Image 1 (tube, rainbow, N blue to C red):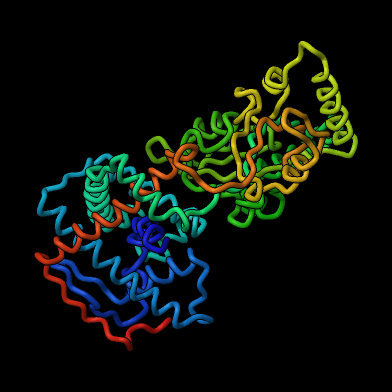
Image 2 (tube, rainbow, N blue to C red):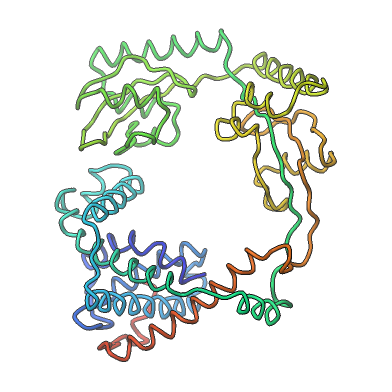
Length: 436
């Protein structure tokens, strides 16, 4: 688990690791792999990021954190060994992919710190210089991932090996949890006429204050009802098409830097948008949002409507699928007739779903119930009780487990062979493994 998480965060951490901490502490080399070095600051930053991912508090569990640091160092060394092998094999990555990954990582950091100014402040350089400095790191990491993936794809498994894996591991394999296949119809509680008027009046008043010259970012901090951007003065950071609802994007991508939109309505409410910057096919905008707040009357109207739909499902010629396509507000499932899919019942995130399932049998439809998303009715399509895994019923799953185990085993052998021909000098001392 730790190694998988390490690989997952490697590209992100490589952008902010040793260079950040080295500005604050006296750095030292803890390992040399061919022409590459691993710095103590780099090791500490990776270890702290991984500890955060795993829920380990370094101050409360210092011994566990030291163990994690040792594992992290071995992972960093393996990464450098793979880089040496990739260079030896002349692995080449597409520069367009390098650009895209770099851009994605910069955007991730912008989201993390809140704004471009804050990122430049923390790194001590402008965005263009950040990209120049870290582009080679991204290229190296992509080479390693390409080499790793190529090797993994070369390792396959036979039917006999899967059967042998099952015979050997049968007693230790996890059981299949109780699962349910479900469909639903969702009706969100929409604001009625009175709440629409209140929101319109509020956004119009704020628009007049913007036109009168008041600071838009400050107005966002005071009045915006978007909790995700309010503290940042409404700034959303660089966005691309597909990140937000179409009505918002249609206007945001037409604006020039410094330009303000007219009032924009989306399903969330009313927005005022300001373009801060444009970069190719991306824009950085800030917005002020006034939510459409439904009233108790709106709640009752929605409840009555979903009850009406449930009653209609008792009619012989009415199907759940056609009613979902016509009435459901769940855009991700309505075209599939409201089909949500197969779930382990203990892993259902909404307890209301679990409660509803417990009241019905296969083929039945629940009474309306409410979640944070709105009002639902749910149909139980299928239920499977908890059981032990079997080759007959779970071949694909067992095959994936067996293949993963074989790939890890073979990959380790391959890494051990590569390491014999790569210069590795570990200089880390136990005294280096301090938390801060």
